[in-house]
Length: 355
View (cartoon, rainbow, N blue to C red):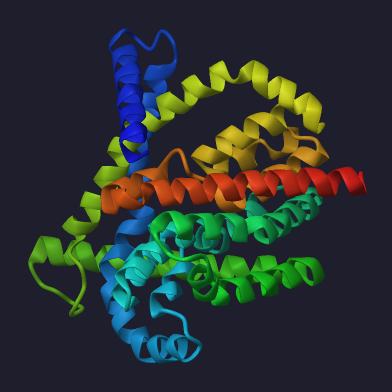
């Protein structure tokens, strides 16, 4: 699967690059440029945390390692509480006792649960209109409820047994249950809490970026144990290369799937914006959420549910996996797709019953 996906990305690079040379006649050249322009925002969102990850792991290790071992879970699973590209992978690898579990936590679980907690919920609740927050929260709850499907599929594809996969995800399941209860009982307080948490992560990332830049420019390491900024930028550059091809390839996919999506929209009761949002969400949560006001109520719930597992599968998360552990790309892809499909099916079933 890794080879197939890389060939598809390379084809996207060719389509986008050639169209750019020809003056962006088909619109693929603009997507080619857009993919590379993601480098700046990607670096700002993750480079600092990559630099600080060894330090954070060293500081938290004294508490996290014995606590997780006491409940029979690999400490590397702590990294899954952070997004894959916001320090989750690095923390998982630094804290893990079993390297395979660390990779699974950092690549698969962080791209689903960690991304939902750190990015999708605070950003989504902040972007959608107040009257749409109920639909968004309901969708997130349905996405969290179906998330175990993706986590189990990803674990098995990564080479972890089903029973071990379930055991390792106990902290994730417990926190998911608390999130479900919080979003149902006290949604406004949960939104404020997530926003504060996201702001704290943002500040930490910026501090790491400052310290990494000072070390690079002056040769002075202000915090012992930090990873060099150049190492972080290598990961960012790998993501940028994948994005060069992923956005033109996704645009091509959107065009050829236009009629099938219209058919599916009629069968599921969603309007065109709702169906388009699913494909947009597979690239990034932000374009899908920005289309929220154009979706019907069912589309709003279904899209939020889909984002929990499947967001960024065709863009940043794929690029991150390819640049760090390409052998786990298939596991991540399988986890996010199966979890996303399960979320859509569950949301449609629930909406049919309540509608």
